Length: 295
Image (cartoon, rainbow, N blue to C red):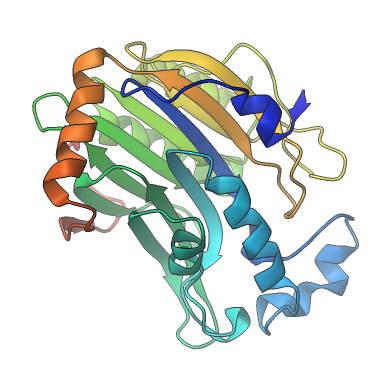
């Protein structure tokens, strides 16, 4: 089911224990609404795309209605984006006080493949992880909110196209969130809800998908549900929709959740402590070998 932003939010009043979440693969701000555009607009992955700033402005107007936004396929400020850091640009345009970017594949001036989390709440810690795979450059970004004794861990991912690599990456994520009580995992997982990868993830982490299968790809004729938001059993799913905002080859997926009351208060308290300034608690975690759980 497709929805507009106004349909999703309605007239609901914000609450300290509710979160409005959005996950969106923005495809560098390149408008793609036919399969042949992957070929005819392939140059836009190397050179600046003239309409990208206009599209980014429209994306900023969409995401400003949310509390926490996970974005995939951004550029960190290279030739192809006109040397604009797209995470910073969207953060500024959408008035997000906190931004947490991760460069997955740094090709210098040519391309800086990036993902990013934008938030109304301050983080108490950020860790960056390189995911295993045949082709390196896929990553996970973990942003922790609240307090260390009762934290909310947001995990933003963009998984590989190949099944074998995705299985390795799912196993990495299972170890990563092991022992975490409150988790939101979102992103472009490149696999459908009833795939063996999703079954492996849910059985070994307890993370839940909404019952509805909501196609997000391709944006001009959505048939595949490959963009997901999963949550721990402690987090109540109030609403989930795919939004009719075809500025990329993917559609954004939005979810409204209710948190345990104490966690909601901790989110507000931690943000008040940082007083609108982004913190620098960034802890890189590279490689695909042994790792400890983030909890």
